[in-house]
Length: 119
Image (cartoon, rainbow, N blue to C red; front, side):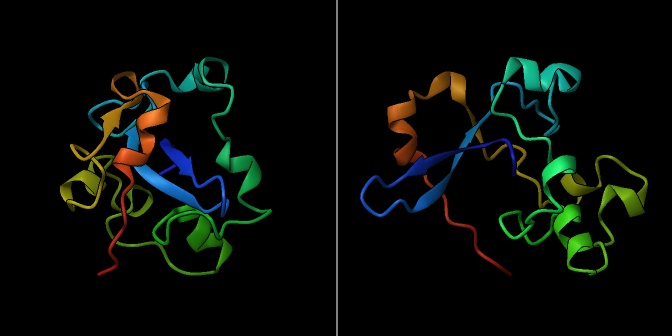
């Protein structure tokens, strides 16, 4: 989820997730230039460095969050399944559900706010 662009309510400071994704997110839900990501997108977060401080903002299914909460990974997680497409195969990825930031003006992000439904 770290590739999502956010929309923030200026009055309440409430932060909303949108379906607007980084221009470098490819069809397989991976960064198309991972090695240069922090150069190409200076605001790109290095999760490996910051998750220990506070992982609560990460999705419930995020491996970093699960590890910090001492919870097991899900069977479909690539670290367990040894299959980098297991998240897509489990139909729980955002593949096909996002829109590249190239096609949305920043002022239009609020038109793409999403609400995640827990199952």
